[in-house]
Image (cartoon, rainbow, N blue to C red; front, side, top):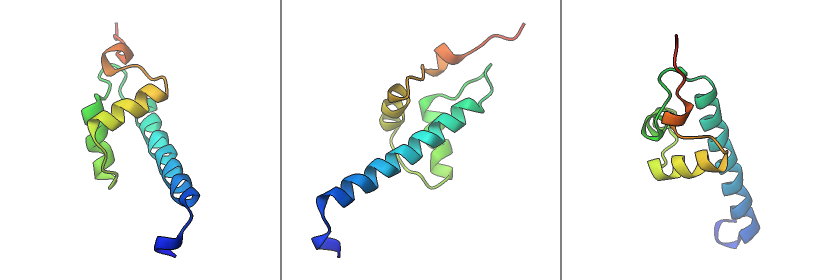
Length: 79
């Protein structure tokens, strides 16, 4: 158990958690108000409300891995 668990188990566990967090980030951005998109800090706070505690820098890293631009580049203007 605990100390004797193979290293692969831990790697797989964290890779799965990373993917779940990335899915949540993608979902938040997909459903955001396009005229006022979420900043990485806002995403961090939204995730914290779901008991997912990661740094803003980690949000940025995951967002970039998902090839999603920053909030200012996602902003669309309403005419």
